[in-house]
Length: 113
Image 1 (cartoon, rainbow, N blue to C red):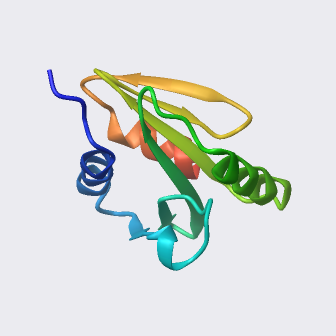
Image 2: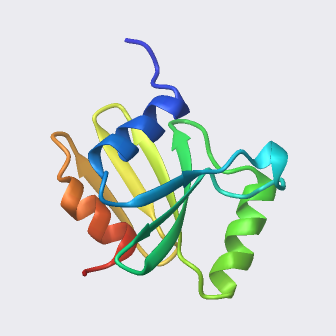
């Protein structure tokens, strides 16, 4: 079985949550450590750092995430495993198994509407 690539994980999220206004961030043009994706849904904004297991956030990413969370921003580390997605917002972690309930994933990231 081939390992999923991060860009495919991004496409999976984008395609299953089209109601969210997504912006893919290319940090090489902005700054090191900035998460991969910014999303806004019903006035709620979140940053998403995408990872495919076994990859983890780098030291620069971890620092950016810490600073944003200290400023009361929402940052979710989303890790794609074979058969599941693990979401961690720094206060809680939740695992979603296939078939994914995309409404629950959106609710974890942005809260209830």
